[in-house]
Length: 160
Image (cartoon, rainbow, N blue to C red; front, side, top):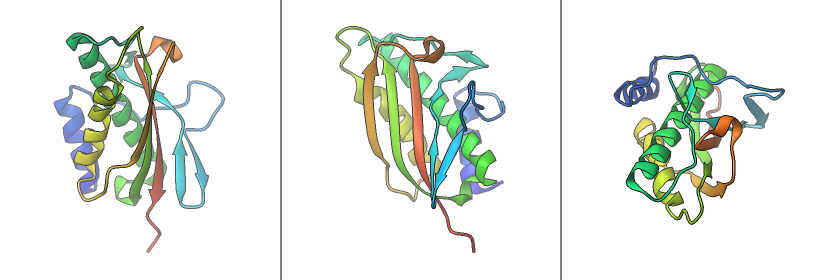
């Protein structure tokens, strides 16, 4: 297990996430698609103990905390899936992009604050890497009623 793998699992344990298996597709699609050295992930909805963290998210402190929990849970699941795909997080040279979809209630304005939780997790797992580019949008619904769905674009480290 690499340093990044250990940091991820320590953060997952701190957030109360068990060592559940990596996210797997729920439909007819792949977890990742390769384009040269880039891996584009499918979207993952945040879950706790296998249960979707449901939305919508509103501007209340409780609503924002719900969104942050869901964003962190989705990021953990995606990084575990990346580790399974690549054989270890040391194979990640750079996280290029992070996209977040938030099931937002009417008038919601705290998109940035919610997705900062996922960005912070990435910073802690990969402390020597720059933060990725990011897109965050509010949507009316997500699969399973999820509060947050995220996807990543990763650059794979060249083989030695």
